[in-house]
Amino acid sequence: MTGPTATDLTPNDPGTGGNVTNTPEPLLEVRGLTVSYRTRGGTVPAVRGVDLDVWPGQVTAVVGESGSGKSTTAHAIVRLLAANGGIDAGTVRFGRHDLAALSEQELRTVRGAQIGLVPQDPTVSLNPVKRIGEQVAEVLRIHGLATRRSAPADAIAILDRAGLPDAATRARQYPHELSGGMQQRALIAVAIAGRPKLIIADEPTSALDVTVQRVILDHLQHLAEELGTAVLLVTHDLGVAADRAQRIVVMSEGRVVEAGPTRAILGDPQHEYTRRLLASAPSLATARPRVPLPLAATSVAEAAPLVEVRNAVKEFRLPRTAGSARTLRAVDDVSFTLHRGRTLALVGESGSGKSTTARLVLRLTDATSGRIVFDGADITTAGGAQARQLRRRAQLVYQNPYASLDPRFAIGEVITEPLRAFKVGDRVSRLARAGELLERVALPKSTLERRPAELSGGQRQRVAIARALALSPDLVVCDEPVSALDVSVQSQVLELLAELQADTGVAYLFISHDLAVVRQIAHHVAVMRSGRVVETGTAEELFTRPRHDYTRELLAAIPGGRHTTAEAEPLEETLEEAEKENA
Image 1: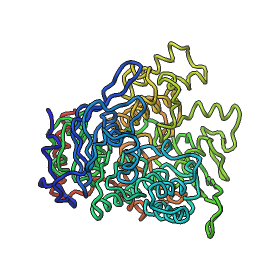
Image 2 (image 1 turned 180 degrees about the vertical axis):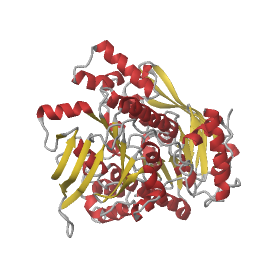
Image 3 (image 1 turned 120 degrees about the vertical axis):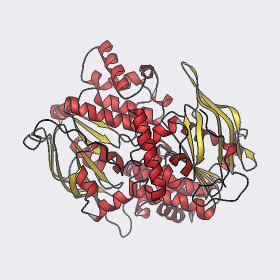
Image 4 (image 1 turned 45 degrees about the horizontal axis):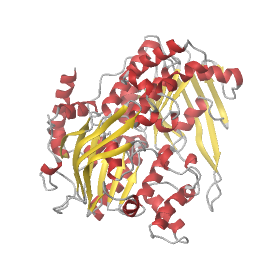
């Protein structure tokens, strides 16, 4: 079944919602876009004849599974494909330009000034040897929007608009000194610096907690509504698309399978694939709690905890700025316990200290003070053989799949690397184990021979999860493990983690800004703010009876809740029908 094409859809369709322009012509008009990648195994088609329109003053969301072609479509529009990718056919009309036919020199006058791109991954997009403020100021100077003297102050103002706290201090820091969410906000500042007519946002909030996500999306929506900026939003989060987009384009296997006004797509999806996506979206299903996760059969209360953190403190030195503190207390008197077979989720805003706390547990950084115990042994200052043994028993799934996979290795080498390091098995048994793990994270065994650059962000994260499970560890620290995954694969991975926990008794320290995901996976939750734990409790208690104002604020910011009761009822019926079909 094929959904309506872009030419069938106009900005005046009923049920669009939001501020819809009366402009008869779209700002961006894509027709028949076809893109492929050259690999060692031959040419791989990624986008197959995509039609797409974006009007001024509108947010158009492109949704679909990882590998569906949505990010490739976004990057092809501005001709920023990987070196082995190319546009085979189609036109990309932006105003009077066909971007697919422009020379590289002509493109430079359009990119940045008229079209801003917010990439998915800040680690590879930000210059690691330049301060954040310099990178924003550079955009202003290149396009003649500021002088060398005025650019630094203007850059700080733009960073503030993008939601970075204490923008003057952040402007003087390097990317590695910021959290993942702060890095993403710096990228957004770079994209909006030139006040472009079109912003292409490729998963712009996948690394952000829900409250900061709301601030960023509010800003993008403001640009669309007040300034007439067009926004093409690429996202795997259907809750975000439901809240923010006037129109939704659903992609699968490189094709558009359904497109139309948001209300129509969510309330009456025509394609089976769209219905499946809706059924898998945790944020849209938050109002309908799922069956609680089974708890370990043994009495956890009587068993000794696997991990104990007592009064942990971690301080970092900051660059000098007038009137600001020289030391940042990233973790401030944090205490918690984690038992085998259980999942403890750390939630909170970007920069709240969640990831730093996890690094203390794994001994990837030294605590300033406090005590950390793993399986009865004090590891606060562990080194040598004790630290190596901890590396085998405690594994980490990083937030960023682009930076955590060695680009020189084939995927088979990536997954078997921990086995080689600890001399587990021989080459044949290691590859067999890698193939088994790939299958469990919903990737074909043929992926073993591919390289990270040939995979989408979601596929890379699945590889990272497979690698972390290779040694059958006692503890897995999951630092935003599904933030880069589309909702259907996200659901598969969460189910996989639950199955592994039930089978092996592995414990998870689960770090996430997505409270809808936390509700599905966690037994207990600790809410962090400014380095401190402000509330703890079981997942059910925290979601149904939150005690702290900050917890209530986080819950209120979960995406997908902007529908009226009249709109939500048919959506609930659609989700129930889709879940019955899947069952």
